[in-house]
Image (cartoon, rainbow, N blue to C red):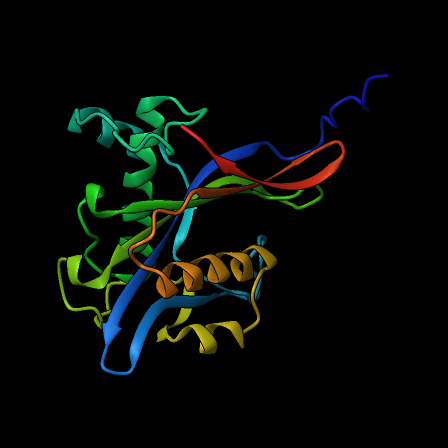
Length: 207
Protein backbone atom coordinates (compact mmCIF):
# COMPACT_ATOMS: atom_id res chain seq x y z
CA UNK A 1 0.00 0.00 0.00
CA UNK A 2 1.41 3.38 -1.00
CA UNK A 3 1.25 6.53 1.06
CA UNK A 4 -0.82 9.60 0.38
CA UNK A 5 0.18 11.63 -2.70
CA UNK A 6 2.26 14.75 -2.09
CA UNK A 7 0.30 17.88 -1.21
CA UNK A 8 0.80 20.33 -4.11
CA UNK A 9 0.19 23.22 -1.70
CA UNK A 10 2.91 22.09 0.72
CA UNK A 11 5.95 24.40 0.84
CA UNK A 12 9.10 23.09 -0.84
CA UNK A 13 11.98 21.99 1.35
CA UNK A 14 14.81 24.48 0.86
CA UNK A 15 18.47 23.95 1.68
CA UNK A 16 19.62 26.12 4.59
CA UNK A 17 22.58 26.68 6.90
CA UNK A 18 22.81 27.69 10.55
CA UNK A 19 25.94 28.77 12.40
CA UNK A 20 26.66 28.41 16.12
CA UNK A 21 29.54 30.59 17.32
CA UNK A 22 31.18 29.44 20.56
CA UNK A 23 33.10 31.98 22.63
CA UNK A 24 35.39 31.01 25.49
CA UNK A 25 35.24 33.42 28.44
CA UNK A 26 36.51 33.29 32.04
CA UNK A 27 32.93 32.41 33.04
CA UNK A 28 32.72 29.54 30.57
CA UNK A 29 31.55 28.94 27.02
CA UNK A 30 29.08 31.38 25.51
CA UNK A 31 27.10 31.08 22.27
CA UNK A 32 25.49 33.74 20.12
CA UNK A 33 21.71 33.88 19.71
CA UNK A 34 19.06 36.42 18.80
CA UNK A 35 15.28 36.70 18.76
CA UNK A 36 13.21 36.58 15.58
CA UNK A 37 10.65 39.32 15.09
CA UNK A 38 6.98 38.99 16.01
CA UNK A 39 5.99 39.36 12.36
CA UNK A 40 8.27 36.61 11.06
CA UNK A 41 6.48 33.88 9.08
CA UNK A 42 8.84 31.21 10.38
CA UNK A 43 9.37 30.82 14.15
CA UNK A 44 8.16 34.29 15.25
CA UNK A 45 9.52 35.52 18.60
CA UNK A 46 11.74 32.45 19.02
CA UNK A 47 15.40 32.72 20.01
CA UNK A 48 17.58 31.12 17.35
CA UNK A 49 21.10 30.94 15.99
CA UNK A 50 22.00 32.98 12.89
CA UNK A 51 21.02 31.14 9.74
CA UNK A 52 18.79 30.98 6.71
CA UNK A 53 18.12 29.58 3.29
CA UNK A 54 20.76 28.96 0.65
CA UNK A 55 20.97 31.77 -1.91
CA UNK A 56 22.25 31.62 -5.50
CA UNK A 57 25.19 33.80 -4.44
CA UNK A 58 26.33 31.04 -2.08
CA UNK A 59 26.54 28.57 -4.95
CA UNK A 60 28.35 31.18 -7.04
CA UNK A 61 30.83 31.82 -4.21
CA UNK A 62 31.51 28.11 -3.80
CA UNK A 63 32.03 27.67 -7.52
CA UNK A 64 34.36 30.69 -7.73
CA UNK A 65 36.31 29.47 -4.71
CA UNK A 66 37.03 26.16 -6.42
CA UNK A 67 37.84 24.38 -3.15
CA UNK A 68 36.52 20.80 -2.91
CA UNK A 69 34.46 19.84 0.12
CA UNK A 70 36.29 17.30 2.28
CA UNK A 71 33.92 16.62 5.20
CA UNK A 72 32.49 13.17 4.41
CA UNK A 73 29.46 13.66 6.67
CA UNK A 74 28.52 16.91 4.96
CA UNK A 75 28.77 15.12 1.62
CA UNK A 76 26.32 12.35 2.57
CA UNK A 77 23.48 12.59 0.06
CA UNK A 78 24.64 16.06 -0.96
CA UNK A 79 26.19 17.34 -4.17
CA UNK A 80 29.80 18.50 -3.54
CA UNK A 81 29.14 22.03 -4.81
CA UNK A 82 26.03 22.31 -2.66
CA UNK A 83 27.93 21.06 0.38
CA UNK A 84 30.54 23.76 -0.11
CA UNK A 85 27.89 26.41 -0.77
CA UNK A 86 26.25 25.64 2.57
CA UNK A 87 29.42 26.79 4.32
CA UNK A 88 29.23 30.06 2.42
CA UNK A 89 25.54 30.38 3.31
CA UNK A 90 26.29 30.00 7.02
CA UNK A 91 29.01 32.66 6.81
CA UNK A 92 26.79 35.05 4.83
CA UNK A 93 23.88 34.66 7.25
CA UNK A 94 26.17 35.40 10.18
CA UNK A 95 27.39 38.57 8.50
CA UNK A 96 23.88 39.73 7.55
CA UNK A 97 22.10 38.91 10.80
CA UNK A 98 24.79 39.95 13.29
CA UNK A 99 27.19 42.26 11.43
CA UNK A 100 30.10 40.09 12.56
CA UNK A 101 32.91 39.24 10.16
CA UNK A 102 32.54 35.48 9.62
CA UNK A 103 35.30 32.90 9.87
CA UNK A 104 36.74 31.31 6.75
CA UNK A 105 34.51 28.54 5.33
CA UNK A 106 36.89 25.78 6.41
CA UNK A 107 36.77 27.02 10.02
CA UNK A 108 33.14 25.86 10.21
CA UNK A 109 32.53 22.35 11.59
CA UNK A 110 29.42 20.49 10.45
CA UNK A 111 27.74 18.87 13.46
CA UNK A 112 23.96 18.56 12.98
CA UNK A 113 21.32 18.30 10.26
CA UNK A 114 17.55 18.72 10.55
CA UNK A 115 14.55 18.93 8.25
CA UNK A 116 11.58 21.05 9.33
CA UNK A 117 8.55 18.85 10.11
CA UNK A 118 5.55 18.80 7.73
CA UNK A 119 2.75 21.26 8.35
CA UNK A 120 4.98 24.29 8.86
CA UNK A 121 4.59 27.41 6.65
CA UNK A 122 8.20 27.00 5.51
CA UNK A 123 10.41 23.93 5.49
CA UNK A 124 14.21 23.69 5.41
CA UNK A 125 16.86 21.02 5.19
CA UNK A 126 19.25 22.80 7.53
CA UNK A 127 22.89 21.97 8.14
CA UNK A 128 24.32 23.29 11.40
CA UNK A 129 27.92 24.42 11.75
CA UNK A 130 30.08 25.22 14.79
CA UNK A 131 32.77 27.88 14.75
CA UNK A 132 35.06 29.48 17.33
CA UNK A 133 34.63 33.18 18.08
CA UNK A 134 38.42 33.47 17.95
CA UNK A 135 38.15 32.81 14.19
CA UNK A 136 35.92 35.84 13.60
CA UNK A 137 37.45 38.57 11.48
CA UNK A 138 36.55 41.38 13.87
CA UNK A 139 35.31 42.25 17.38
CA UNK A 140 32.79 39.68 18.69
CA UNK A 141 30.56 42.33 20.29
CA UNK A 142 30.20 44.69 17.34
CA UNK A 143 26.67 44.11 16.03
CA UNK A 144 26.42 47.57 14.46
CA UNK A 145 26.25 46.14 10.95
CA UNK A 146 23.42 43.71 11.70
CA UNK A 147 20.26 43.72 9.62
CA UNK A 148 16.89 43.65 11.39
CA UNK A 149 16.04 39.94 11.19
CA UNK A 150 17.33 39.17 14.70
CA UNK A 151 16.96 41.41 17.75
CA UNK A 152 18.46 41.18 21.23
CA UNK A 153 21.67 39.60 19.96
CA UNK A 154 23.62 38.32 22.93
CA UNK A 155 26.25 35.86 24.10
CA UNK A 156 24.63 33.27 26.37
CA UNK A 157 25.68 30.34 28.51
CA UNK A 158 24.03 27.01 27.72
CA UNK A 159 21.82 27.31 30.79
CA UNK A 160 20.77 30.85 29.86
CA UNK A 161 19.97 29.73 26.32
CA UNK A 162 17.86 26.82 27.53
CA UNK A 163 15.71 29.19 29.61
CA UNK A 164 14.60 31.14 26.52
CA UNK A 165 11.63 30.59 24.20
CA UNK A 166 13.23 28.15 21.76
CA UNK A 167 12.13 26.07 18.79
CA UNK A 168 12.11 22.35 19.56
CA UNK A 169 15.01 21.65 17.22
CA UNK A 170 17.12 24.35 18.88
CA UNK A 171 16.67 22.56 22.21
CA UNK A 172 18.00 19.39 20.58
CA UNK A 173 20.94 21.26 19.06
CA UNK A 174 21.81 22.75 22.46
CA UNK A 175 21.85 19.24 23.94
CA UNK A 176 24.26 18.15 21.22
CA UNK A 177 26.50 21.15 21.91
CA UNK A 178 26.47 20.35 25.63
CA UNK A 179 27.53 16.77 24.91
CA UNK A 180 30.38 18.00 22.74
CA UNK A 181 31.48 20.52 25.36
CA UNK A 182 31.49 17.80 28.03
CA UNK A 183 33.87 15.63 25.98
CA UNK A 184 35.62 17.94 23.51
CA UNK A 185 38.20 15.42 22.39
CA UNK A 186 35.71 12.75 21.36
CA UNK A 187 34.83 12.00 17.75
CA UNK A 188 31.06 12.31 17.58
CA UNK A 189 28.78 11.27 14.71
CA UNK A 190 26.48 13.84 13.13
CA UNK A 191 22.79 13.48 14.12
CA UNK A 192 20.18 13.87 11.39
CA UNK A 193 16.56 14.69 12.32
CA UNK A 194 14.11 14.03 9.49
CA UNK A 195 10.62 12.79 8.68
CA UNK A 196 8.91 9.99 6.75
CA UNK A 197 5.31 8.83 6.41
CA UNK A 198 5.84 6.90 9.66
CA UNK A 199 6.86 9.92 11.69
CA UNK A 200 9.97 11.77 12.83
CA UNK A 201 13.32 10.04 13.12
CA UNK A 202 16.86 10.57 14.35
CA UNK A 203 19.71 8.73 12.75
CA UNK A 204 23.45 9.24 12.54
CA UNK A 205 25.11 10.25 9.29
CA UNK A 206 27.72 7.81 8.06
CA UNK A 207 30.07 8.63 5.22
